Amino acid sequence: MFFTSNIKILRKRRGRTQDEIALVLNMKRSTLSGYENGISQPSLEVLIAFSKFYKIAIDTLVTIDLTKLSEFQFSELERGNDVFIKGSNLRVLATTLSRENEENIELVPEKAKAGYATGFADPDFIKELPTFQLPFLSKSKKYRTFQLKGDSMLPIPDGSWVTGEFVQDWNTLITGNGYIIFTVDEGIVFKIVENLIEQQGKLKLYSLNPIYEPFDVTLPEIKEIWRFVNYISSELPEPSIPSTELIKTVAGLKRDVAQMKLKMLNKS
Image 1 (cartoon, helix red, strand yellow):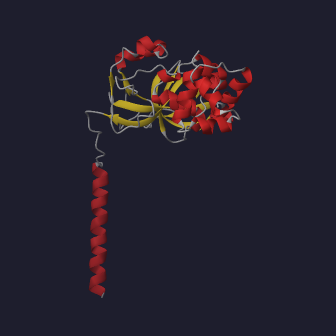
Image 2 (image 1 turned 180 degrees about the vertical axis):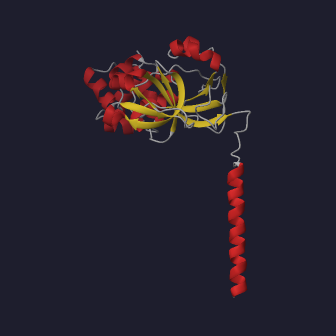
Image 3 (image 1 turned 90 degrees about the vertical axis):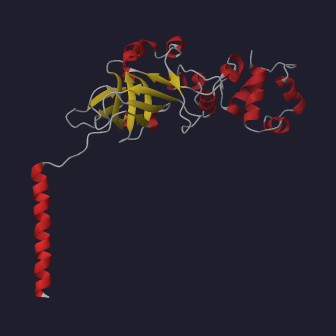
């Protein structure tokens, strides 16, 4: 049982003293100290009080060793994303940590996408992926990088590495923004999202390349969503070069404007 260590770390993360927490929970400081040191065992009423105060389920307080959580996982818990409270609303993510106990950024190359379809929730599979760090990204958030395949998101070139931030609450998706969507049928796709969750329980996905038609995905199809952060590519996007006719038209307009200016000067 991890109750004693958990209530201690939760108190310290909030920067509270035992006196302050004891006052809020309507108990003596010595009683709280007894719980934190494992001298006293909490009653059900006490467990309920701690659960309500920290907004963390009793199961979590008792059975989960919070000291083993990464900063990202702990932050999600503190924001109210507790699997025992929210059930399926919490997306449990397999992840890896660096030696400094910081979240790695795992790379999912094209050749690993087939394995990712079945191993995305398997810690043993995830730990086999290459990892790296980007110092300019937040250490309190979770990121993963996927290799882009195809031309549907041009001018972002084929083979680019697209990094996304893990999205816990899908209701926060912003229409018009880019997201990496992992679905049962489509696999890993990078698209612009139209959020229709509240109205129709689905997302409409658009490509940047206009030759590709948009398509819908329902929530049961979706396994993970990552908000687009940046991409890395060794290729420059194709330049937008005007056609010959357009160049001639612009040149003609410039000439006409110059002649009009000359006529106006002559009249004055």
